[in-house]
Length: 172
Length: 275
Image: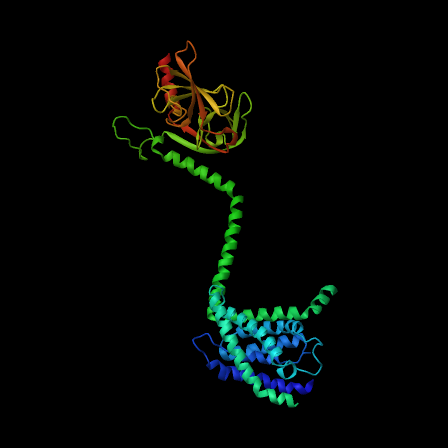
C-alpha cells in the first residue's frame, strides 16, 4: 500500500498542473471547460477508505481552486464526486465483483465499463460545479448546456489521456 | 452519548462529506465576489422575510395598545373638527379655526362592562371624575350614538345606553329636518323607535336619523341609525318609525365621551325661561 503513495502523489501534482497550465487555457465560447483533474479521484484504488477519498478530493479541489481563483468551488464539486464514487462503483460492479489488486481503469475492466463509470461521475461533478459557479437556478438551461458540452469535452480529453497509459498498464 | 458517538463513527463518511462541503461553501461565499453577493442578498431576503412574518405575528399582541392610542387620537381629532367649535351666527361663512371658542371636548374611554340582553341596559367605562367625566355627557362610538353618562365615581362611570327605555334622545331626520325622539322598545338590540315625527312629514326607508343637537348633550349631526320601517298607528298624528341602530351594542369596545362646554349655560337659560 505504501508503495503506491509516490505514484498517486505524482498523479496529484500532474493532474493539477495539467488542469491549471494547459486545460484551463481551452475555452470555446465559455461553454467548453474540461476539468480533467477529477480523473485523479476516479482512478484511486477500490479499497481507498472513505475518509481518505474525501480528504484527497478536498485537497485536490482546493489546489485547483487556488490556481484558478475560484476558491471553494472545485473543492465542493470534488468532494461531492468523492462522496458519490463508492455508490456508483457498487452500482455498476461486474457480476463477480472487483478483483483484489485491480484499479478502476479501462486496462482492467474494459473501456465500456470505464466510460460508463466516468461519465456518471463527471457529469455529476460538472453539473454541481456549474451550479455553484452561477450560484442560482435562474439560468438552469445554461447550466445544463454547459454541463453537457464541458462533460463531453472532458470525456474526450480523458479518453485521449488514458490512451497514453492504456498500453503501459496492460503490460504490467 | 456513547450511542451518539457510535452513530457518528458509523456514518463518518457522510458526516465528513457534509463537514467538508460546508467548509467548501464557506470558502465559496467568502472568497468569490459574485457568489458572495448572491449569498448575501438571498440570505438578507430570507432574514428579512422571517423578520417580516415574526413582526406580523407580534403585531397582534400590541393590538390592544394600538387600539387605545388610535381611539385617543380619534377623540383628539374630533375635538379639532369645525363642529366642535361654537359658531358665531353673525356671519354666514362657516369658520372653524382654533380661535373660535371650543364647544365640544372628546375623551376616549374603554368599555369594561356592557349588557345588551336586559330590560335596562347599562355600560361601564374605565374613566371617571378624575378624568373629567361628569354625568349628562354624551357617549359616542365611531359608528354613532351610544348613550349618556348617568353616574360617575372617581375612576368609573356608568352609561345609560340607547338600549334602555329610560333614555330618550332628541333626534331628527337628516333629509327633512323633522325632529322627534329616539327610545328603545326593548324588543331587539338592533332597533329603536323614533317617535313624534308628524304625519305630514315625508319619511323614506333608509333615511338617516341623526342627533338634533337640541339637548345640549350631543353635538348635531351624529348618526343614530337608519329608517327601517314606518308605521302610522290609527288615530295618532305621529309616525312610529323603527330605526336600525348604527352602533352594534354587542361588540362595543372603545367609545368617546363628549363634553359640551356650554351645556350648563344652555340648561340654565332654558330653566330660566320656563319659570
